[in-house]
Image 1 (cartoon, helix red, strand yellow):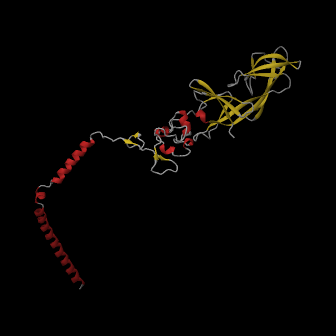
Image 2 (cartoon, rainbow, N blue to C red; image 1 turned 180 degrees about the horizontal axis):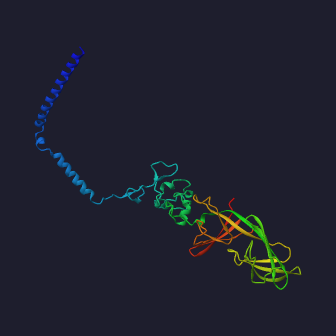
Length: 341
């Protein structure tokens, strides 16, 4: 019985297939009757019209565009495709916009004129209440600092002098004192005690060795060849004559500095200062570098730099203030910096 059903189904399928073929042939003839021109010439009128439209479009695109002038509600002309930043005063309706560059409009953030913000594409930046203190380009300088220095606030490679960001992290002090013995004949024997690298050090001229005026001393050891004996003179204090040795410092940064060293056991302390400086910028804030008193340096700090326009002139007596010098367009300027708390 099952075999009979399968034979019947196959027969029905064959009849359906034959019927579809016949209908297809009949339909083909009907299409030719309905669209005789299309059958004879497949290129119809719509295709020709499309070609003409494309040709017209190509011709139009080959000509330079003519853009209509665009102005703000206050009449300020702006370039097309450039956003115009408008603002609304606090409490005013949203449709009462303000053109910040309109004639007579007050600066949003004095002393920076509104036109400065718009010039550098910072209209949105101007909308912040703390806009002058913000750093739009992330170079470590605020918008106000860039305005004052006439640099580009939207260019990380354009910034004011790094000297403006120089800070003093701490000041280190190393003390020392000189004494001498006078064996007659104008020659003196010197001894020094001090602190170097956090450790107590000492040097002396042994075996009765003495030097005449005009001679460098300490041939080796701590403070080697740092000093020169200039002259021995006598001064009266309270009617009592006292020998005073005049000694010149030869240390780099302190060349020419003179010290008056009294005879006897009295200790006249002197100080060697080192300022630990840093630049208060995001990229260099943690990079503290040492500069000895009297030495010059570069910014960013490079101990091997060919040019070192900045100088740590001196540290004030209380050891809390650094006096710095630098050249600005050939003019020497001075700045005092306190140690940061």
